[in-house]
Length: 212
Image (cartoon, rainbow, N blue to C red; front, top):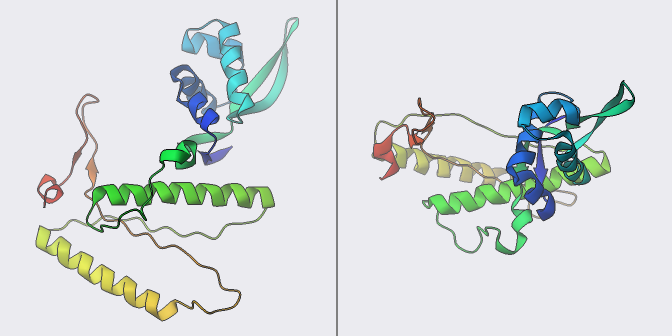
C-alpha cells in the first residue's frame, strides 16, 4: 500500500468523494476486509457495500488482497491502494488554477495556485515514474518560524528572496547539454492552530500577522 497517491481521473475523483465510498476507503486503509465485514461498520447491506466496492475497484482505488472461504461462500478481501489520496487539479482540467495567469508573491490565492500546480506536476511525475519503473528525485523542506512582528517577517522574506536568488544565479546552467530543469517553490504562511473542539474553526496561530 502506498502512503499517498494522486487521483487524476475526473470519474475516479467523483467516486472517491462519495461519502459512503470515502468511508469504505478509510476502513480499507486500516486493513483488508470483505463486504460482509464492512457492512456492519458502515450500516449498509452487504450487496450495497459490494456495489460501492466494485466502483472503487474499477477506478483503482481498492484492490483484491486475497480470498477466503466462509461456509459455501468465497469472500473477497479488499484493501485500499493507498493510505491517503490527493485529488489533482487535472480532475478539473478546464478550471484548474494557473499561477502564470497572474503573479503576486504576497497573494494567498497565488500561493494556492502554486500549491495546486505542485500537486498536479508531482502527481504526474509520480505516475510517469511508476509506469517507467524508475525513481524520482525530489526534495522538500518543511519547518516553522515565529516572527515577533510583521516587520521581521518582511525582512525575512527579503533575505530569503535574496539568498535563493543568489543560489539560482550560482547554479543555473540554461545552456548545459543534458541538464534538466527543476521548479523551486518556497512558501511562507501563518501556521494553523489545531482546534481543541471539533466545532471550533481553524485559525492562524498569530492572527495579527494574518492581516498585515
